[in-house]
Amino acid sequence: QVQLVESGGGLVQAGGSLRLSCAASGRTLSTYAMGWFRQAPGKEREFVGRISWSGGRTYYTDSVKGRFTISRDNIKNTVFLEMNSLKPEDTAVYYCAADRYHYGNGSPDERSYNLWGQGTQVTVSS
Image (cartoon, rainbow, N blue to C red; front, side, top):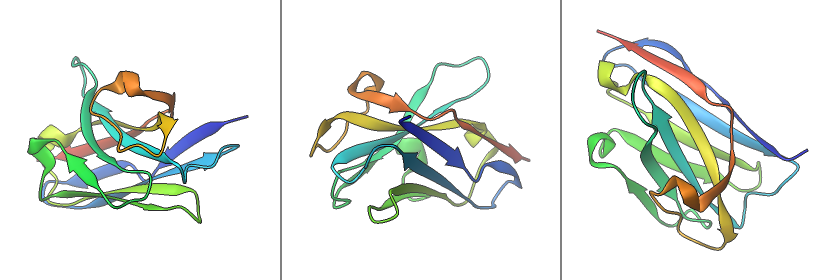
């Protein structure tokens, strides 16, 4: 069974840090761009950032630039989202997703992804 599993979420105070992981089983991620998305209560899911299949390119939504960093370890088949200087408005369920095509740079459009994790809750208290 092919699946993505996120971990590392939790409760943190504003200004703190968390590191989310997205591990794949049943499918190698090494040739796929990966995206991170989040969904806050009562809001639509939104793009957070993406990393190219090689890891050489990353892109972020403006609200997290300079605070969040996406990286990947293709040997471990895992993608990471390092979140620093967290704010209460970062509170959301965070999802990782795999691009539907090989060797791409990913996209901010969630329709470009065809494999999703179940999500992990991140709560930032003020």
